[in-house]
Length: 625
Image (cartoon, rainbow, N blue to C red):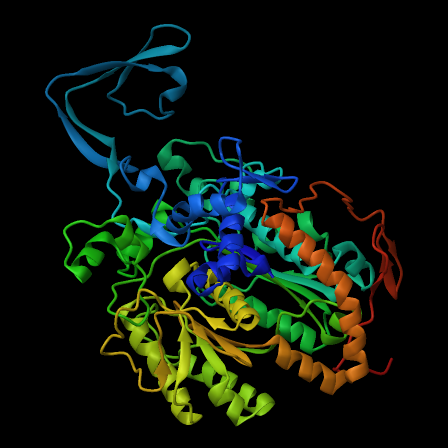
């Protein structure tokens, strides 16, 4: 796994550890603070010695203590750090109609004058570059520039000072795509597997990439800049149109990170998009169509326009709602950090940015490679809501997805494991409707399966709602819980709201010790996009592997894993010093067709160790010639 969100880097469970920092031993807290300090540019490490921002050598423990407040205050949900959302104000225009009592004369550069002028305007040339324009008395429609105060000032942002585009040759890439490059590179490097060697073991068509996001790239480098280019007076670029597409994270991985010619695509399902793509990868492997699949999402929606769109829906925790919730006159930085309150009295979700990627391998390939197994995904279930009034309102599909997921765990692991050794990773958006409807889903499924005290985790309390990447944040956190035996609390949960169906659910403000066999990753997306994924712990996965492949095969895998684990740990140690292995191969090995060797059974591609087999399944029968 790899990626980045408001809590930090995904690999090595850095982001997870940020959400349970107070439950960690002091030594682990120090290591975490140093890793985040390096990420945020608060310190550097060279040849084993740490240096502060002034370049002075400093003891690791002292640097961690000095940076502690800065790291804690500038990760997770917080006041939006873009000055436009605070004192500067958001740039805008206001339509106005000016009543001219007399004619108006002004000079203007020739290239700034509109091509089509009102017939009553008179234009006189002053020189080669300058024109004089006279507008007669009367009404004149204009746009007056202004700045507007931001109505929403809280978001889950990447750690302050960290910019993924700095680590590779990024040229006008939308932020979501730069995050994709970093996240996929982090995933590959932390796996300890050499991608080129892995690729050479397989038919190129045994590999697939399913990655996208929920709303495309809507910042100025993508469709955001394109769609407002006419009214803003800016020129559209040749990159904005193609780089704005929602499947572009997959395209970037194929073209610049993996060099894959295998399966590709992106399934968009609003807040459930990560699970939609995970389902594609899992089904491909279960059906024998692929052996290695990269799955992920990357969303960067902290822009004025997207925030205003969600605010207009009444979906976001805006400043006025937060003030009303706590009867406050002013909001402090601490209030913004508490903006997201799943299952408590709340007023809307907090938008966030994140990119999450995981590498799926079939079980035989994982054993053969000695891969470090973080968990396994036996199933992902997706169901719609049926008839609806409001397209954005929750419905009934989530009862089906969670019910099926629970049935799978019961069938695989037994009743006791389902009731006592599973936990829920709730969608937990912090909207009043979500707290009622999702808790009711949990309550009914708990009743049906005899569950009396189901632990509930709601990681959005820390990192916010990253739209299509939200379930990726949840999955990464669940893998962290397996590794550390800890469930993050919900620190903003002062009290469970009265309308939450909490009788069979267990909520905690503090991290809890818990040994889990499985976790349920739940998503309830706008439009009726419901999904629930099952992720099994590494220990349960190993037991299943031994049952299927035998103890000898698992013992041999453990031996092969040592070298892979060593490579992984070397990367993680470097990454904690701020040394990332960002993989971006622009223009390398480009092929256009004439270089291929094509026959009726396979295609040989230069640079790929094995040919692409053209053998296909035919379940339709054959007509007699």
